[in-house]
Length: 212
Image 1: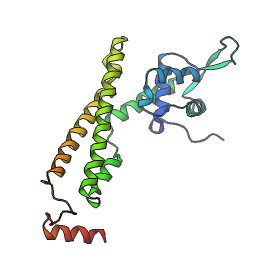
Image 2: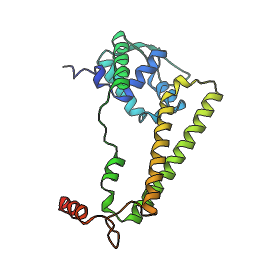
Image 3: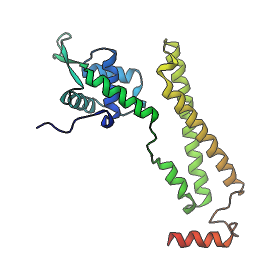
Image 4: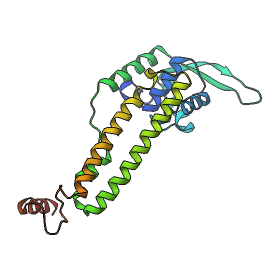
């Protein structure tokens, strides 16, 4: 009996990436892995050979890809080459449209950490946020280097729109956190462990009551 079909709305990120490759040209799974890693598209989703092979099997089961043929290179085992079907093309286009227009709520751990940060000492929060900002700035520098290298190799911005969006997000986040760190460091932002207390008594008591 056939399993649940993999429609556009249920395509995994890796399935979308596989279909995107097969819209360029037919490929075998090993080549897909190599191309994704060479393009550094593992920044978009985890790319592991086992997961990719499983994804291709599922796409074939759901008739979104089909066998195009087989190839043999030297003494290596014969490899199956796949191509996207018409249904696969439709599912891919629908998935990308949903990703661009959708607004599904996400739950980044940073937001939870910030919401509960008042439960830690001021100095520890400063230390942890400074560590995060250093990591963010390093990520921004790495993105800049990657983009410069890609452009030098003849790539175009339209193939790296995700990088531009990610960079802008990282810069905004790092800048906001830097401002928060400054306010924590100069104590212009009150904190629960301040001695003497800097928060109005009713705010402190309400907060503690909410935690009980």
